[in-house]
Length: 464
Image (tube, rainbow, N blue to C red; front, side, top):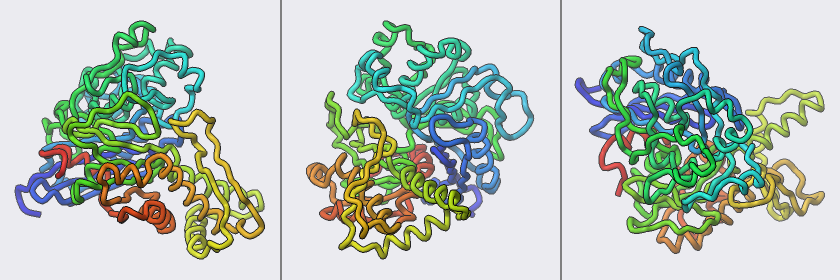
């Protein structure tokens, strides 16, 4: 590595793992990267300490001769979720360690985007937002509304709230009060993206704890600077306000692609998105497609499905449980390998089975979360056929949300696939290519949100 080279650091605090990369400013190439499963818990609540531990695990495995030349830090993470903390006790500022340590004060769990405590009945009782974006269970403001009604005493214990990535930035910079990007604010609900303001007047009418709402700034804004040296990164290094992982994944993917590209990311959940024209104004109507803030005051058209790799993982866990009930211990990795092999040899002539894979529901559907299976017969119940029907159903569900016709209407000429659940699954890739057959499809190794977070520290932020 050349002496005096400068780098930027990107971090992604995802639903199941933390990813970190170091990017050379001059070449914009990744020179080091690390990842770590957080094991913070699945579903509605996650252990914040385990997420922060995974961050330190990743940073600690990157060579210090790189970290000492980091000049800027970009952070992104899972959207919609919320945790609460007290600034005075959330982290320890007096430690001599070169790591940031959580304090002994109370920090809530991270209530994630998968939280389902807000029923449709409950959501119908809270005020209607002044926003083109819907409010749904798992969104930060919806969770705070639920706390306000059912656990108001807990809210009174805390002075700050934010996403997990906002919390990390606050800790790194020792902020008295968190700042939040437009991207993450929009994901909480009750935020007008055109005016870039919270719906304060609406929220005040129902005694919502508006003091917990962070200050909102544009993506790319500096939140502060490192309050102390961090694993070799110099004290005073600038830290950007945290971003959404979806936007950073798209930014990362589009860095090396033509502008008329749609990005399909299938990891825990699934998102299909493309960048809208610069003069686009989001309509105040709701459908399976939503328009989330991107960079440079532009929007992404997004079909955000709650069903992706999590559905396939649930299917594998079910098979493993059945085997255990029969007295056989089989690791999930073996089930995955065997299943993907059998899908390739599934009998298409005898397929016929249809799986509607909405195991975790969809935000645009009022029906309760449930998957359905149709046309089961004696010729299509092999594991390969069932798995193939599941993969087909996942892609069909996305296609129903954002069709080939709509992509073509906006001039999309290429579909690029990313995400661990897609990149490792060739039969799933084949289903994507088949259902979006009029648009050339490929998968890429790019699309890592941590790389997008690193790129966001550089200018211009949006490619092309």
